[in-house]
Length: 439
Image (cartoon, rainbow, N blue to C red; front, top):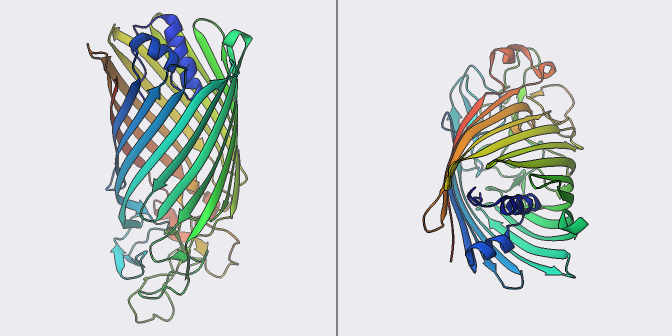
């Protein structure tokens, strides 16, 4: 994340920074006037670690901006992420061991009793690149055009974006229109599984298909308003549509007994190394449309900056979410500050979210046990300490704690599933070091 300038700036500069942050751009003109840097660099090293041996992420992000005399700006970004650990498969826990076939279909691995089944082979490295060009035209208008690209061992993203903004009301009001389009390509290990098809024995990839892809189109309409010397506000409406392959090819569902709720073993056993019970790969709709409304206020008072925001999102998968976020930055000296942060998130579950599939019942058109599509609440709490060196370089450290608590739909719980933790809590630590400087 990009660190903002220290709080020893005048009120007008602070509001300029706040306004540009709301618009999603940097305060290039103000920075140039104060520091006269042709190049600006923002870097961040982040660690994210979940408890119980779950996902661990280490990422490095670097953003370079080249400021030109005519207010044109070139931005180049590079991000490298390394993820390891275990991630939930979607199968339900059992009071006995379970065995599943690996994504490659070349081996099996077993999971202990009474624990959420996890995929221990989770390992990925992502490299992402972004570039954008911003320039004013016709005095009150600004155009920003960009591209993005990222690559993982089984996933590739390529996108373009365009934002047009115009100032009104003596530059106290800015309206913006943003458009973006992207293509994401899946190349799952072992091939793309057919939706709601069974997990097969080792060496059997007959239900795997070729690589697949999805297309994403986004529209953002926004307005930013300077209400006074101390208050800036923003309101955005966003539309997003994704179409194509929207499944997670590594997520599965358990097929369970209608009375006991226990996963059912294959009958008769194949005699070949393979899954210990019947599991089906998930199947999601091939289209998703989201609508979201986002509001944000920044208030400056006696060196302190209060930043509060709210986001509402709804989609045609019947997921509704609410996000409240608050930050309060207050100076410790003319070169340092503290910024506590609190975020609350809640969402409902998708209409096709299933704890499991019941043997003997008709197979639904769509089904997924992915916890990210379930009903849950999450709280993030933390603090950031930032300071400016005598050479004018900005540094900060951020430490946060993430807590997630979910619930399985009561009407979907069958038999002894009531004795299991079907939606386990998740705790995570987030640590970030940021360093910004100009040349």
